Image: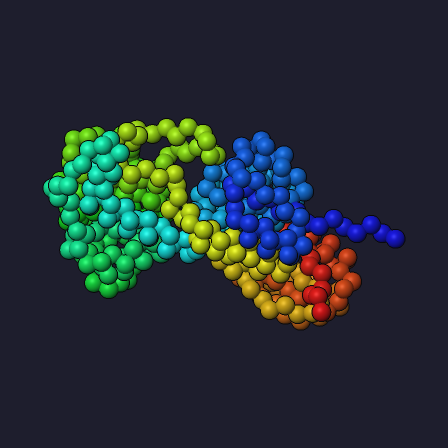
Length: 408
């Protein structure tokens, strides 16, 4: 009697929510779950035989890692950002990457609002005084957020939701985005970043992780902010010059700041946090917890693990950040997943090979994205040995997977 094949393996790092592990276990995966990030060499070692990898922001998936992981099918970034993954290198090896673009939006927005209120009311100063035994009931420098002008840099999922809730609190909202975005409510779009800085009482950054945003905010931008204004960064650590921020805090030009992300962050809990911003009583520092609520992490766990499961089981690439998007309803027979170089005639060649082998097509869908094409084909025959050899021999083939017939 043949020995049954071992279950496929998944590796989840950085304390990803238990629900993600349960989702993958229910799908038949053997799941290893660690509470910390792994350096490159150890990650390579742990990926041997692993089909699915789940990470957050502190694990870097380099081209060397991908080269050393031939069994890897997909990577789940259990967060918004994917700049810690070499996306093009993953795509060129047929490794799908998924993230959670919406799941923690509300949590980040609530943190931003709470910090805006805390800094505007000078709660950091009041808290420090009370812990030092000083009773200061003065209202000097303490304000309501109502009628104050909030400048949002980056009007994506987080920035736009923050816009709506801040307006509900009575704030006037300005925003700047390099893309053409629809203003929500009474928010007003600024034509330039300088315009937003000159008019805002509070400036908050919600930009993405593209390399062009590196060093977006430095000495020049802080100098252009209104005297006595407040600054927040809950987006990416590398977009802000922290030395310049400290100088403007110490000079009094910036009245307060809240920072949740840093250029260099500890890999695990308990490691020392090093930053030029430590020791400033009117600066709120949080350890990259913008999306770290139990609700957000549970939702992210369900969402991303579901994407990994569906890609492994069905070849579905909806919302993949690096592969063409295909979602084809499953027929009963085997399914062929053919990722290929995006050149004219590939689909015709695939269908011709199927016809030459006397195999009927029950369903088929093709999508392209940049240099890659992805065709999903459901077939009626289960005798596919010669067929797969012919498809693999195509010079355009990047990766071919064959899925067993759907369970009845």
